[in-house]
Image (tube, rainbow, N blue to C red; front, side, top):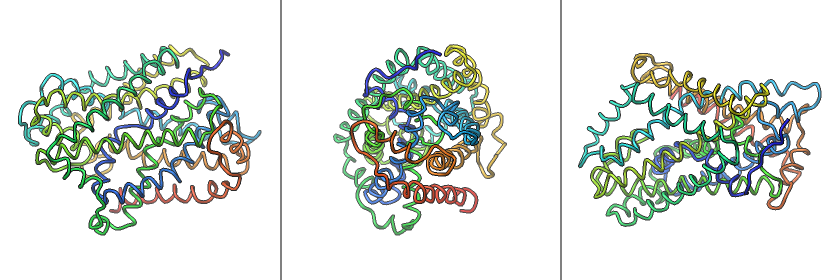
Length: 458
């Protein structure tokens, strides 16, 4: 068996792992719910859960990867006690990667489509939100447009992974992440010059007790908890795979904190770009895709040099999406290579076809299958796939990792502590077993229950 590749630098590991965590939800969801749920108050609650919930769980997933030096295909078998059945859990966790990619590759294609539209000046001049919305719906109703862009981003991402860890994933993703951060900082600084900067930042980050009272403290806490959990992509081995390529020079809590800081910086700076622009041009902030593809397109069309600013913004969005896509592709490629004992090139070719096929329901859900509503109401296949991964597989996967390191028959908490504390940096105390065994599982079960309540009963 060939020697496993390793990252050439620690920076490569941190940027690529952060790239997996930094996704579109951070960019279009975090700013909106921050403004909605109380500004700075929400941010403080979010940071609390990120530190005391997200970081310990991330270190846990990293530990399984670094100790086993295997992907989900073999990691449980490598670490579990003889005769146990923990490895059966890997199958639905692996399935989670494909569920995520079944819609994420389609949405990443949207970013490419709008990046091109921005730089070519197709946003127009003084475009109203109604016209921008009609253009977005026109894209959704055209399966050919979406398919071409989906194939393009999928081919590029798999092509990068086909070159290997150092020559492909690290060599391409590391500078791409650096460009992403530079773009983000540049556009955030540009917001200081906009006339609505003060009003936008007040809406975004000023403490808002009225909103806190309006939605209730429990709902605000639930939203912050969910955002902290989902922002780090824990539960399907997508973060674990990069720990298999890292060295043991630093403790896993230290590495997890570094990734958390990068992830949070992107989320906070995204709002500094979005809200001052909205308030400068008298556009009401929207939510989700409407904020990105309708509201901001209208905003950019009203700006001087709007084509450039719009193109740069969607380039940033494209890089954020591609970084996650490449990371999860690397995970399924490593799983395929280990499970079927095949070459990287063959694993790439097989998975390329699989991703294109499983992406069809999401893609056709906006046109040919638009009359099908899997979750009722106006839901689409994208909503169903997002529900499966976000409300089920991710939290259950995190719960499985917790059980694996704390329950009898699993890996064992002492072995987890030994691996997590290997290297220099912040170390976990031995008494942390109670926190991992009782507190974190309760939080995850609360998240699952609350998400079901929000989807089906609220």
